[in-house]
Image (cartoon, rainbow over all chains, first blue to last red; front, side):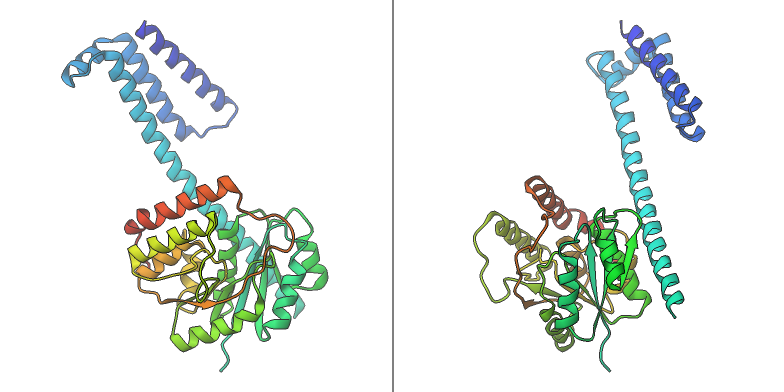
Length: 113
Length: 232
């Protein structure tokens, strides 16, 4: 059942990413993460032994728990880097808006003279 | 030589108040220059300023108070002002207190002078003032400074502060930034002022916004501040 879930997850993610690529709504460089993510899901689906082995190593009760844990952790990291990226973009927008406004004001001052 | 003083008036949808605010400054703060920062207003704030020939900078999109105020600080920096005062467009602040604040800054050598409602008077008991008292307490705890009215929006900044607020990321005109610069060695003092109730239009702070404001300021003063670098 876990295998089926993982394959479905992988297929859906892949379909979604490809759709976004076709509509040019995502940058090629940003697709790398998602393709690797899909690859990991598929790998786990094909070789569920990986999950069993890892859950043994880390003393996690069931392989499913471990899979969830890892995916949640990966997505949290992704979310955090996205938040950093948004902050950077926001400060760039603020800077640009301020500069545009100040530049227009200086032009006005030159015309008045 | 007389110091050059700039009043920064961030204005977002303030068509009802902007004229009285600017006229108040012209009448009651002679020698003080002003700049209206029209923060992407959707009403006629910008047109009113243009028709009346007010000194006005128009932001093409809305940035919020922090971004608008910072634009004013950049203007102050580029035009070489000695003092910049944050002045609300909603009619709460009285221009008559601007020059006394500047005099106080000169006499005491303060970097920041806050136009304080509770410098000489006690705080009234209300939810809002309890929030204010809480911030006062936290600033006392983390910096040792006693600031009676940290949320007052009427603040004067001197020559040393202007480049900081003009160029640094996240130096918003809020109590947590005041606490930060105080901790980094800036001298902060207060002058008693009277404030009017909002004349027209709607206040920015409603209940949920007040709560998130308090949370943000508390976190910033108690936690985040310790990790921020001193740029000076």
